[in-house]
Length: 162
Image 1 (cartoon, one colour):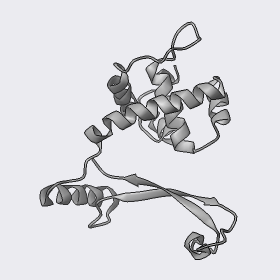
Image 2 (tube, one colour):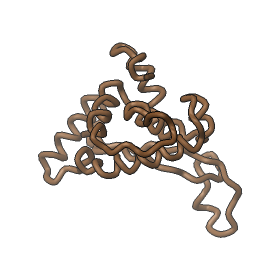
Image 3 (cartoon, helix red, strand yellow):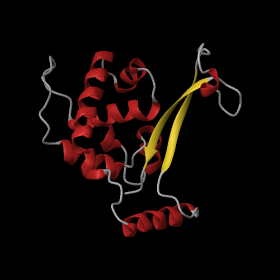
């Protein structure tokens, strides 16, 4: 189990590879421990922690499933199924973890937290994204050009401090 190989002090390793700290990954494992195991042709199902790490690695890198399969020493179809299953589990519980403030006090608390962490005032969220170079579309080409005059699609990831 790769998660066991990362000690508490190796935050950088899990943060870099999986975009979450070891304690956060362990919390996800506890949350999904009761999820029904997917039937498998193997002698036993993949452990929940392993499935979560496979899916997190896919989300974190956006790399091809085959690369993720090679990293975790499993088949590409297994990566696909695991990612689908973990995504479904995350979808079921996301509203328990991701919440926008419903009042001014909550909004101020989030702004204060961002300011304490980043020294940037009046921020309630952050957007991360990946630029993917594409062939120029025939219509509305100007909508796909970034500040460096590169034609691309922008995939956004929203981050909210909880």
